[in-house]
Amino acid sequence: MAAVLTLGLSSAPAHADPQSVSFDDAKLRITLDATHEAGMYGLYSSVRRDDDKWKGASGVADVRTKRPVRPNMEHRVGSITKTFTATALLQLVEQGRIQLDAPIAQYLPDAVPGERGQQITVRMLLNHTSGIADYVGSAFPSFAQLSPESLDENRFRTLRPEQLIKWGVQSPPTHAPGAAWSYSNTNYIVIGQLLEKVTGTEAETYIDRNVIRKAGLKHTYFPTSPHIRGSHSRMYEALYGKADPPREYSVYNMSWAGTAGALISTMDDLNAFYRALLTGKLLGEGSLTEMRRTVPVKDADGNTVMDYGLGLYSVDLPCGKYWGHDGAVFGAGTQSLSSPDGRRQISYGLNLMKYQQLNGQGVPMPHAIDNALGAHLVQAVCGGQGPLTAATPGQRATPPLPLQFVTPRTAG
Image 1: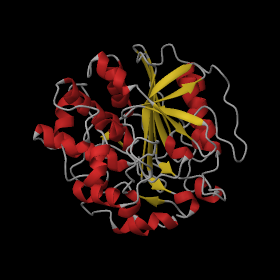
Image 2 (image 1 turned 30 degrees about the vertical axis):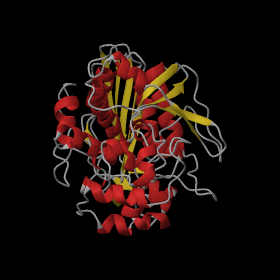
Image 3 (image 1 turned 30 degrees about the horizontal axis):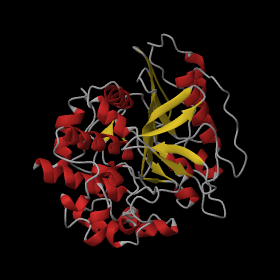
Image 4 (image 1 turned 45 degrees about the vertical axis):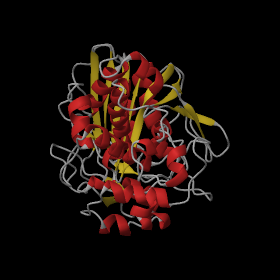
């Protein structure tokens, strides 16, 4: 794995925004560079405390040309899309057009056929307790063998939401409706179809008009082609060492992710979105209360690693509870976290994914990148409060890291 992680790395320094008031610029730069030096090809970070902002980037956007990453690059943000989709849905709940605890069959009788459709509620879709399986394994079957074959073959394939839902619904349920938490992109494709059914508008268009524009975001959009419109990094997928060297997946038809994970954004826009959400500019207090009503997410040993609400989760950091989401698509990882009042925030993007090794149980082993990235996160939002402890083999790094770092998901 070490050979994969050092491929094409350069000593490109961090590029920090000069407006660094109230931040320890040196420590933020050091922890960002340390993540690159640990093996991450390139990453960018946007930090905000009240009205003060810091932005930085470290490493390369292209391992061949050594083109450096920049803080304002557009990025595929994966399942952070789910917070946008959930926000749009909750706006309709506020309008009385959808009920959270109504069965999905009441709105989409054909999406989840039979008794399951009567048992699975809208809330269960939003908080991943529906028991509907994820469709990603069916869409990319070679991933089960950690082979990039089906990823390569389907770069330009267009998939309809109906097909994605069919794959998820026809797979064996992960558990009975409401009985447990299990992450599934299928849930949010169904939510997208629910938005369309109730509004009569394409889901992506509705989210753009009522969430993205309302939040004042300028660089956030659902792609209409396999290409990213603005300046961006190439995106590399290592498949836990099975893709050697890592494959590049910057150009990709994202219809396979849709309202579950297709959004493109910038780190500044993500901070602006979550601040607008948490301060009541997009939803009323009642809806935010529902959004933050969580179920526990446990690891294989039964330990709670985070709490998941309606398209939003919380993690405990050394300086308190933070809310947000993460995203992982082929070659691109993202996380955005905010304090409950939206005053302290960080969003960061990565351009190398599944860089860890898997243990005998198929679980990713902690990597030096994880600890370095965790140190940057704590420095950004906590000012370094509570030293980050290094993880030994078989242990998770602390503080809690994004879902894509602790479970071998392909997307989300």
